[in-house]
Amino acid sequence: MTRAIEELASLLGLAFVSALVPVVNIEVILAGRGSLGGMSNIWLLSLAAAFGQMLGKLVWYYLGANSLQWAWVRKRIETPKAQARLELWRTRTQQRPVVTGLLVLASAASGFPPFAILSVLAGQLRMSLLLFFSLGLIGRWARFAAVLGGAEYVKNLFT
Figure 1 (tube, rainbow, N blue to C red):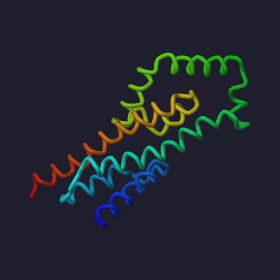
Figure 2 (tube, one colour; figure 1 turned 30 degrees about the horizontal axis):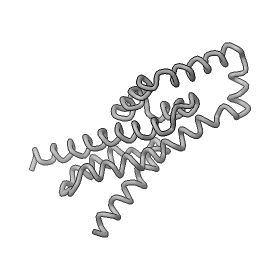
Figure 3 (spheres, rainbow, N blue to C red; figure 1 turned 90 degrees about the horizontal axis):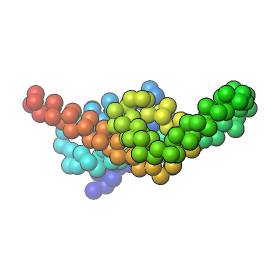
């Protein structure tokens, strides 16, 4: 039992780091883990990775939310045209939560558009934090379960 908890904790930590440091690729780590086989629960491992990733994406979300207070960013959006565009997208985000949620879910599951960029934009556009986190978690969970399961499947083809 202790080994399983250690594995989940280390996977959660690696996923958190991978959300912040682009050269740390959680999919590669998961594919390696999946190819080793002997996984007791793909869903639990992928959930740990997804939760760690979303904790890291919260950092990007809050950076996006606070970035509009930074002097050099504020200077870029001082023009009435830029402010109107920002307000237009905030309104669209808040008036169409289903469309916004589907975009977050699709990005979290597929990586397109890049989820790190979408995380910053979600913060800037003041998307509901609960909606962002929960749909991002579901999308990442599905993505990571597919990576783990796919790697184990490929391993089983050749053994």
